[in-house]
Length: 376
Image 1 (cartoon, rainbow, N blue to C red):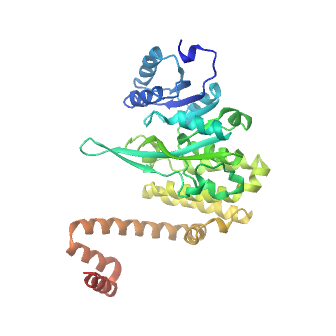
Image 2 (image 1 turned 90 degrees about the vertical axis):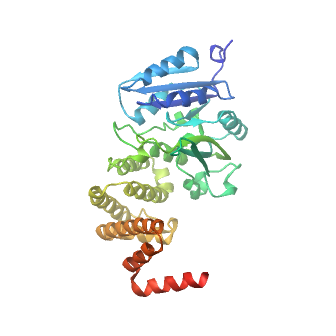
Image 3 (image 1 turned 60 degrees about the vertical axis):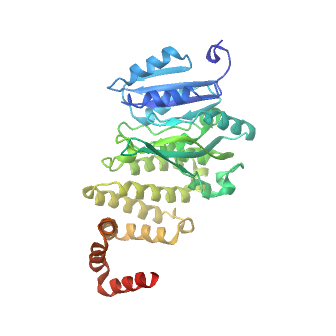
């Protein structure tokens, strides 16, 4: 008798949101269905795909009854995630993006850690990968946190706000279903938007009392899918809109607002900076003007906690608040200088000399030459 035909609650429900991913689906589905933890439910949410994504899902579902298919009109990532989580039957909920894949022992090990330590969620390290020019895949591991003491121990984010600086990647872990439903933790639903995982991530850290991290990488995160939100710069206000939604969540929960408003603005600053770095030049100033206005208003309400920022971060934030145009010009100058340096370095010594003359001036260029000669 198969696992799914027994009257046994799945250990983990894995939600896979799918939109026009026919090329990637077989690999991700094979990796999820091949888990050593067999007692899983796999919820594939087809978000109005216009390619053969649904056909691939249904083909796999015909072969494996652990797959549950949701086919719906396009509503965006947040809507797909909420639909999938709403019907999940598992003790825990996992998330796998449809262009990634996972190692066979991922859910067995995460589930064991979650049960043994009785936590609201457990997360782990992960691996990034891309395909090189020769067609070979290149993999490199990433740590969830640089703090070794945060691994293999139960943590409460309310007791240590630095825990919020763990990497913001929901799919590296599993979340207790009763915890998600008790606190009505949702994804922001806004068709066509990006970064809708930020709100889910922030809510889980605000509500959780017991979290756990494993120092082992199971999840393989693709870096070369051009359709991924990390490779798009045309959705100018998606990140600010996501953080406006999170701010609304805090306003509805005054006790959480009081404890976490400072770290909210710190994380918001980091993610607005990331979003800004992806923008085309014509979108930079409209973005910074909104960024500046929102932080001036937050400062006036007494919501900013300077102690959470590194000095250089605080200096940058002050410049954005006080002189967004100056910040923009300074940022673009440094981007231009870095690109010119890399080009000159690749071209050779003469071009490198010309670079230093242009950007550093004669005196500093002479100092650079002397230092390099003395090091020989």
